[in-house]
Image 1 (cartoon, rainbow, N blue to C red):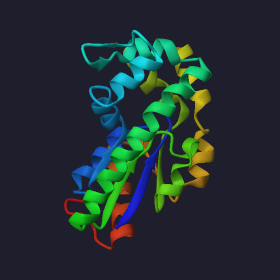
Image 2 (spheres, rainbow, N blue to C red):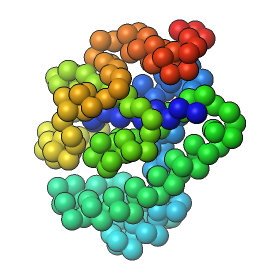
Image 3 (cartoon, rainbow, N blue to C red):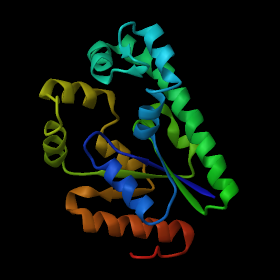
Length: 199
């Protein structure tokens, strides 16, 4: 089974692209979805112990947590030390299931792939990209997002140009969804030897 790591900076269209792989029948492990599950389960007592008052009714309050960690390097590192191993374990269990099921290709969506050495855990990497102004418009249209928050997030991430250079595949979502979908289909064909149905 080939494991494809899918990554991209904030606002590049990674979640949309992950869904395109899934729509073509490729099993996908989405980090954001895993974090949502963990923030209602295993991560809750650990987050509360590290950041008291950021959970309520057995769920992590993401807004309160973001207020505590954004812009604070030490706090962010503490949170990553809790969340990253849990997400990694979740992804490992997912890959085992797909391997057992005989899937020829599985996608692991890793937001901070290059930042956390994630390329060591996958066979190939696809980077999702878009023009800087497209990225900025997408991110600033999110509820509660500000220029300041956006800049703080960007500083934490490996620059887009560097990610594109290191990647095996680049998917440009700024050229429209049809073009991105074709790029996804081409990657699936390259890696499995078969054109996905509906491509």
